[in-house]
Length: 149
Image 1 (cartoon, rainbow, N blue to C red):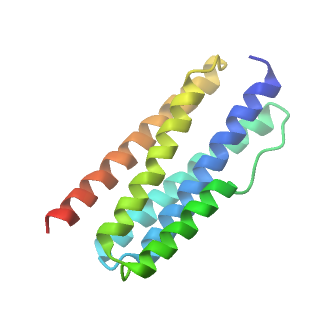
Image 2: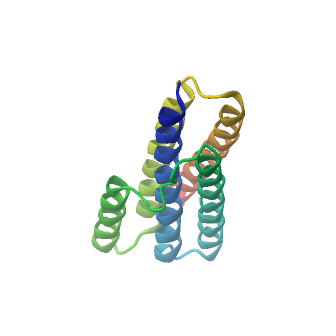
């Protein structure tokens, strides 16, 4: 894999991380439960840190890092806003959509790891992928708890 392809993969993951940051922040704003708000705000900060780390890698490769979320992510957030308005900003519905966003992040990181990335970059992407999996599992568990109550 050449440097240009590596930068493209990293920029795709930067968009994914920025989507996650914005998505978690939107969820935090809409959730009623204070502990859920705190959790989503923490997840947003983790996504922002991941994006910053990836941006530094792109710069170290001589590339221009992405600095904005994707159009698809923006569309998903608007869908969440609409659905939240229709459901009265129900925590269960918000968590459901938050999990869907994390499903996308899991898929994108998995696809990136299927590429022939340089070893040092692969280590960072694998570490971040573990964070994505933790986020997904936590959101899913919170959603399941909200459904049960």
